[in-house]
Length: 126
Image (cartoon, rainbow, N blue to C red):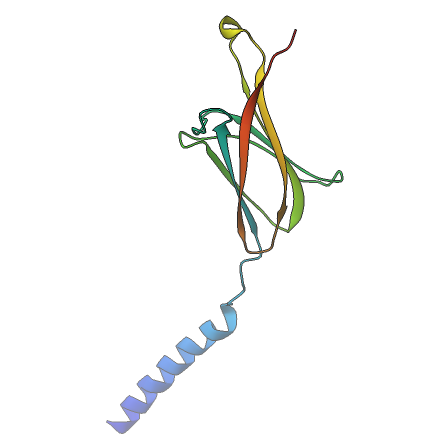
């Protein structure tokens, strides 16, 4: 009976031991960005705004997306960086045409989530 218990214990030990070597506890090194787009006057969230994210200084980061119903676009990056964040929303021609714009610059840090807030103001083109 003691041999069976010893054998079962040894099997359990040697089946769990490799998991300790092949699983890691690496920390999250991604950088996360939530872009929150609002109206400059009403301060309400703006859905369907186009968000364009580029790395400052001409780096390789370029991400484009659309805000959801809550006015938020979320993305992640593999490394920390300083990025320029622009948001735009076309104004229908029936309402005078043009575009609503806003931008900011943020520094993304390793393993952290940052919220960039952008208020769109009206730009009329002639």
